[in-house]
Each structure stands twice: as C-alpha cells, then as structure tokens.
Amino acid sequence: MSTKGSSKGSENSRMNASGSRTDPGWEHGYDVVGNSRKVKCKYCDKIVNGGIFRFKHHLACTRRDAEACISVPDDVKKKMLSLVCKIAQASETKKRIICSNEDSSDSGEEDQEVQASKKRKGKATMEEFIKVKKGSSQATINQFMKKDIREEACQQIARFFYTSAIPFNCAKNPEFTKMFEIVGKYGCGFKPPSYHELRETFLKKEVDRTMTLLEEHRFVWKKKGCSIMSDGWTDKKRRSICNFLVNSEKGTIFLQSTDTSDISKTADKVFEMLNEIVDKVGEQNVVQVIIDNAANYKAAGEMLMCKRKCIFWTPCAAHCIDLMLEDFEKKVKIHEVTISKARRI
Image (cartoon, rainbow, N blue to C red; front, top):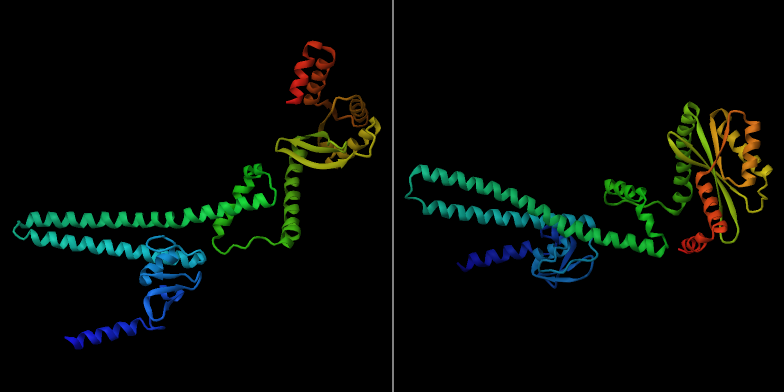
C-alpha cells in the first residue's frame, strides 16, 4: 500500500518537474520555488495562488478566482479563454452523465418501455445541454473579451481625439465607421499607416482616386450638361477665397478654390475667373453659371453670356434672399430690431 502511494507521488513529482509539464498554461508562467500551487506570470510578474487552473483564468482575464493579467498578448488571452471554456463544458457534461447513470440504476424495476422512454429523454437532455453550453461558452467569450477589449479600444480612440484636438463631429463622418470595419476584417496584428505613408503613399493614391471620380463626373457633364456654382467666403481677418463647384445629375463636386484676398473683385476680374472655369469644364458641357446677385457679379454674368452664347447666367437664390433680408432691416423699421437679434443668435 505504501509502495503504491510512494510510486504515485514520485510520478506526480516527475509530471510537475520543470520542463516536464504538458499543460499549455506552463508555457506562459513559472513555478515559485518548486511549488506547483504558485505560478508566476511571464507577462506581468504576478504570482497566482491555486495552481495552473487559476493561472489560466488569470491569462484569460475571466476574473474568476484570479486577478486579470494586464499585459497578456491577445492571442494568448484568446487561447486560454478557449481552454477554460472547454474545461468548464467538459466538467458539466461529466456531471450530467453521472446523474443520468444514477437515475437509470434506480429505475431497474420499471418495464422496458418506461426505461427506453427515459433513455430517449436523457439523450435529448444531453443534446439540449450541449447546445446550451455551446451558446453559453460563446457568451462567455463575448462577455470576457469583446466587451472589455471594446471599452479599452474606445477609450484609446477617444484619447486620440482629445490629444489631437480633433472635432467630435468627425465621428459622424461615414468614413470613420468604414475605417474600423475594414480594420476589423484584417483582425489582430494590424499596423496603422506611418507618417510617411500618410503624407506620401496613401495621399497620392487618394489623389488618383479623386481624379478617377472626377472623370466619372466629366462623363455625365458631356452627356447631360452641368452647372458651375461660385461661392465666396471671407474670414474675420478679411481674407477671402472663391470656391468653384460643378453640379450635375451625378452630384456636386468641388473643382478648385481661388485666393481673392489681394484681388479687387471688379466685374472684369470676376468675368476672367468665370471664363477660366468655363474653359476648364468645357463650354459645350456648361448649361448655366450660378453666381451672387451683387452688381459686379451681375455685370460679369452679362459679359459671360455675351461671349458664350449657349451659357446662361443665373443669380444665386440664397444670395437673393440674403439681400432681401438686408433690405427689410434697412428700409422696414418694424423688422430692424427682430433681424438684428436674429443675427446675434
């Protein structure tokens, strides 16, 4: 009896000896002074009590009888979580089988039909159990990994917004969501673009892509015509630019922007800018030119129609309404206070 006990103890000691352990958890930790009940983590140097089983929960970050490791790699975390889920599933399956066998032994005096019915019922119960356990193990993975990782990832994304002074409304850009969908398809190990790639490699590719989109618009311009739209903008320092856009059935696309800070916006100068844009788009493709309704723009529009017989000048509706409201304020005293308050708001 003592011989068997000594041989069994020596066998266990050989199995737990350094370099002889077969449990995958030992690849990521060390025993503490030959004590297999205490394991030191390779990643965070924390000592986990309770043996290799609790140590695997430590690596899987389940927080079950062990503190989660803060430095474990993602691939190791997923592997350990899969192992502990399989162990839990196997343990529950074993308990159900034992209970089922005990129920079968107690029903020895029952007839064969009742016993067969119970066996069928027991088999269905096992199938339902395995099905439920599979679903619960998947829920465990989602709960202990995806939820925690998403919270950590969202916090890092938010920190990037804060430290880079990025406006929060950038998160409403559809490209923001699409970016993370594509990164998710790549999976673990994705490396973001470098500084050089952002300012050189991918910038050139995006310019080429934009030019391709412009060619698609040009095709529609030739087929069904288009409208040139001019929009001026002035900042608080009296610096001004003039944006030119082209609208067609395919949509509106930005064409170019001209710095007009040092340009006197006379009718002749406005005409020169419009004439240049018409040449760039193609006179045969332009149906109308939409510009402001100010006197200089109106004169430039008339000059353009004299030179380009197939093009119409159309005043901007928004600018017309703006001028109407200015007249209300200046010429109709009853509206002066209301409009001045609205402007302040």
